[in-house]
Image (cartoon, rainbow, N blue to C red):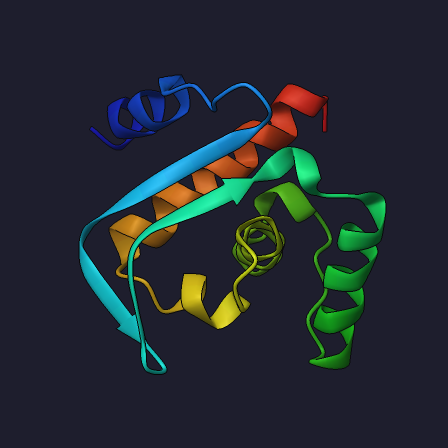
Length: 113
């Protein structure tokens, strides 16, 4: 069943221009801001974003040995694509956060990571 859910998530295409709009199942409020959807512009990400995520993580004593398998890394990079603090993604309900993680992973796979 998990594989079918992952296939469904991955099969949903990211729009041209690398944009993915994630509509939340119900509004989510974090630190005084309510989100109904998050827009991820994956194509706007740069190598510098990758470096900054690695730097953030190392400052907090996290290491992503395999970035495409690290939820911490994926959440932080996805947050940069959505122009939100990574704590927004980390604190979403599990189903929502996992869908976003899979979209980030799918984007990585499209790039050949």
